Amino acid sequence: MRVTDPRGRFLGQALHSPRSEIRLRLLERTDRVVDDAWWRARIAEAAARRQAIDADAFRVIYGEGDGLPSLIVDRYGRYLVAQLLSAGLETMRDMIIAALGAVLEPAGVLLRNDAAVRRREGLDEQVTLAWGEVPERIEVREGAIRYYAAPWTGQKTGAFLDQRTARLAAGRVAVPGGRALDCFSYHGSFALHLARHAASVTALDVSAEALARGADNAALNGFTNIAWTEADAFEALRAFERARERFDTIVLDPPAFAKSRATVPQALRGYREINLRAMRILAPGGSLVTASCSHHVRRPEFLGMLAEAAADSGRRLVLRELLGQGEDHPEILTIPETGYLKGAVLGLLP
Ligand SMILES: C[S@@+](CC[C@H](N)C(=O)[O-])C[C@H]1O[C@@H](n2cnc3c(N)ncnc32)[C@H](O)[C@@H]1O
Image (cartoon, rainbow, N blue to C red; front, top):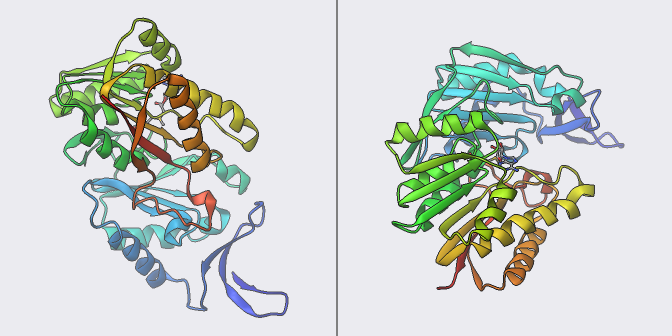
């Protein structure tokens, strides 16, 4: 749709969502026709920006961050999983699928249009095969490890692709021959990177189904040093502290504790609690890789929370590395909604 200002001056072309709170999403600033060739060019540019990624599972199109608002496309090996998250985009569905096929040459395209935000656009929620074939599970590579993604049923589009760079960082800082702990492990993607270096890894999650898939992932890599434990991370961390257990490398990758602005104070208390416990059970010389994916908790609040937890722990922790979204989830500085993932690698001085 053509957009003009009140005086009739041309502003650009936008996706139009008649029933959404967000009526217009700017797609093109010129009057160039948005046709097959336009989509192919945008997709090819986004793919080119990811060429240096050392993995075959990553986000190829991150909506607004790639200038394609409300479009998500993830690559899992030879397959693509896409989400069309606005009514305006939905009207261009066939053109987008065709352009993805032409540029990225996948063996299949799955639409994971089961995201709740589609309801606000007046759209239905469904998972449909748009093109070719997409298996129930896909073996993919991330750096030196391999894992199975579950495109039809897994969380998000089949895996937490957004933490790829943090997982590689965890692999880098894992203490060789040490004891490692991966809290909120899902299907064990951090645990796998830790297991390459640590003598033993404990992977914790409340989902037995995710842990079973984690065990399959360990077998895929030939790792026998990961213990898969169904537990509440809050309780487990308290129990480890009471038992005076120590770990050389700890990962905290919880779900978003703050679902809205109003719940930020409560969420920060939750983050502080798990970080404080983790700091107390960290062995001297060890590393804590900690993250928050809550949109509403901004980076300064996250770092402030870590400083408070460190003060309460009575231990001296150093900030080794700041973590955030990788190049496949580009954050636009002037659009805070495009940035949500924050993290840090902390070290405990020996
Ligand atoms: C953000 S995901 C973790 C993603 C994972 N680290 C990865 O990189 O693939 C959060 C996970 O926390 C788990 N979870 C939620 N609440 C939990 C709790 N209280 N204790 C342990 N796990 C929990 C969920 O089942 C989910 O698998």
